[in-house]
Length: 87
Image 1 (cartoon, helix red, strand yellow):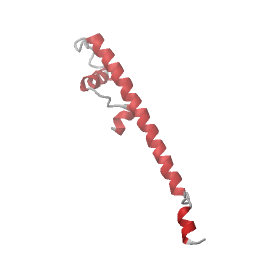
Image 2 (cartoon, rainbow, N blue to C red; image 1 turned 90 degrees about the horizontal axis):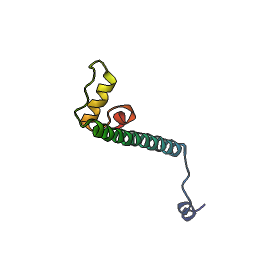
Image 3 (tube, rainbow, N blue to C red; image 1 turned 45 degrees about the vertical axis):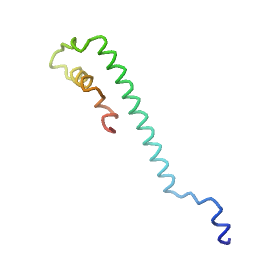
Image 4 (cartoon, helix red, strand yellow; image 1 turned 60 degrees about the vertical axis):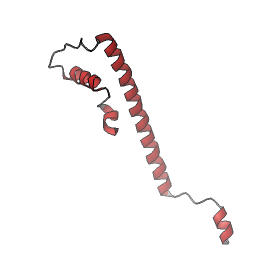
């Protein structure tokens, strides 16, 4: 092949291209899942706020999961699961 033929043809795809594409797809899926978690969290937060009016959260101090959820609702954004890791 002469130089003009070689420059007009498509470049070869190598193993690193497949690795890069795979990493991109994994990152895209992770971001999609995290964004969905944040959306769900926000929907639940607004539902909780509308039913409790920010004053009806009298709970037992030993109920850590519920207290953590209320703390996150008060902070305004999800701090757990995948969203808490990637953000």
